Amino acid sequence: MQNRYSRQILFQPIGEKGQAKLQQKTVLVAGAGALGTVASNHLVRAGVGHVRIVDRDFVEYSNLQRQMLYTEQDAKDMMPKAVAAENRLKEINPDVSIEGLVADITSENIEKLMDGVDVVIDGTDNFSTRYLLNDASFKLGIPFAYGGAVSSRGMTAFFVPGETPCLRCVVPDGAGSGQTCDTVGVIAPVVDMVSSFQVTEIMKYLTNNHKALRRDLYSFDIWHNQQFSMKLKDPVANCTTCQTKTFPYLHTNIEQDYSILCGRDSFQIHKREQFDLNTWQQRLQTIAEVKKTPFLLKATLDSGETLVLFPDGRVLVQEVDDITRAKAIYDRLIGS
Image 1 (cartoon, rainbow, N blue to C red):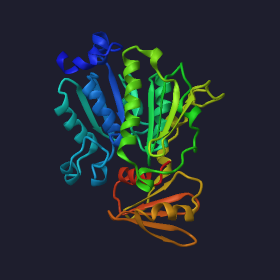
Image 2: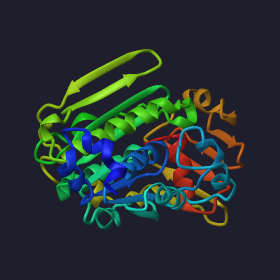
Image 3: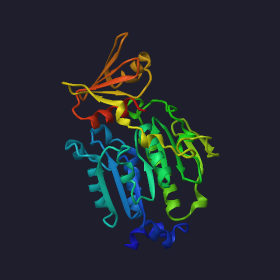
């Protein structure tokens, strides 16, 4: 078994003691998309003892360009990502306990999902879930490895309760650009880089190499050769996550943003205050058939689902019969 990790053990900051520590640890991978698959692959090959992977979606052909654990057969079979990831990772390293859970991460189950976990890694595709993970991590005292990738841009930070500010301090509610991989695309190398930074910080933390942690928010654009590092400073005064500890995303029923429309395969999602229909027409017309009136914008996807956007921030997701699927489509195309 040690021969499997021999090159990693030769790396002096880890060594045999560090390797032994890794084998005793549990990591929660929240989301098994692009970031989550790369991160899970690294964690399992590194010999982290228990990797718990949670994802609500299934494998599609458009995933294969960057979601490294999946095959064309997984897409043909519409395999749940958590199941496909677990199956592939068990083939890679049977010494690691791998737990793939098909579930939507919510305020009702997040603390149970984090039970016994040493670190949480962000593989999600929307800020609502990230803030939920952030709240749960700081409530439970579990470090949170944040990461995001879109287009050719990446961003990552490692937040440690009691030692650093939290995600909300650095990226306040509503600060996201609204761009997603489904609207502006993404190239696979930026995904690999973000996940590699996330896992590197996790390995430092789990092997007690805390002095080597970055302690910054690192962002970069690998296409335009740009990078920026912002040191993590003091927490924001009255931050509801790490200062007042009210943890709003743990106590707010996010499902209030969602409602089922009677008699139709349609769900209403109301998470924004408004939409500029002209802006969203430009964003969506490259991936959908778009029709706009003064009152609404309708975008029909090649896969058959339809989104109807209203100026007051409402979205109808039509031709779906499951709220989890509706949420996944919304998060991919609209974001938080």
